[in-house]
Image 1 (cartoon, rainbow, N blue to C red):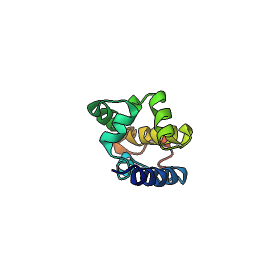
Image 2: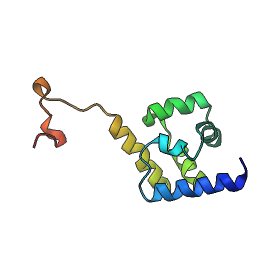
Image 3: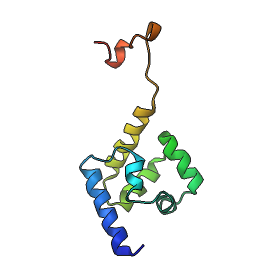
Length: 107
């Protein structure tokens, strides 16, 4: 892919991250191919896929490099990853499937 086209995709991805519209890696991969991102982060593709499935495996250094690649503050990337970790957590249930009050459900 010509550098200009790749640069345009990265700039669009940056704008989407900064606007808070990127919520999943599927959205990232629409602009930045999984294999290319893995290579640019210095990760083997299989390792990267494992981390995408279980975001808590990402290291802070990898998040910082990702932010640098798309010229986004690493705090935005950190929030992106931690939001995905929160979504992956199993929801606690109370007795007989009644929502657990502590997590704000059932109030």
